[in-house]
Length: 179
Image (cartoon, rainbow, N blue to C red; front, side, top):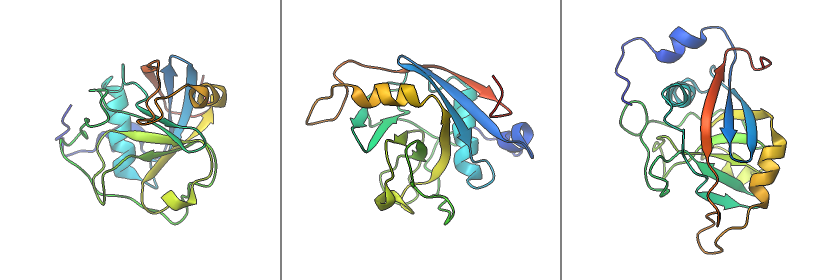
């Protein structure tokens, strides 16, 4: 999906509202609050990809106990994925957003200003990641599913789960407390 509209999808969908999504995964649902005001480009990209079913079928490709779990690559290789603009986009670091606890979502990247579609969820506080990866959301419900992901057996060289677990679908909510 390439997004070329002059009017932002996020602005038309989320003006002055809090957005959340539920990732429906093989191990349970994970509900996420998206930081639309703090990281507008990352939020717009993530929400538009969710709305287009882009993440449906994406496997968790990297899973490091006590650290992170990564997904968001529709090729399921860990090397793919595109932003809604069809190119990499800039980092949005905020002093008030830190990897201070379990459940923060950040854009995965390959260096400065190289965000696309892949993202990770932290399993614990990761201060070494602060100001290196754009934090754009946090888990607000579904920590049991995160626990199940963290327990998965992985290949010790690649950290890929031995049995693929994936995002089956995504539900977008305007209010993070909505059902």
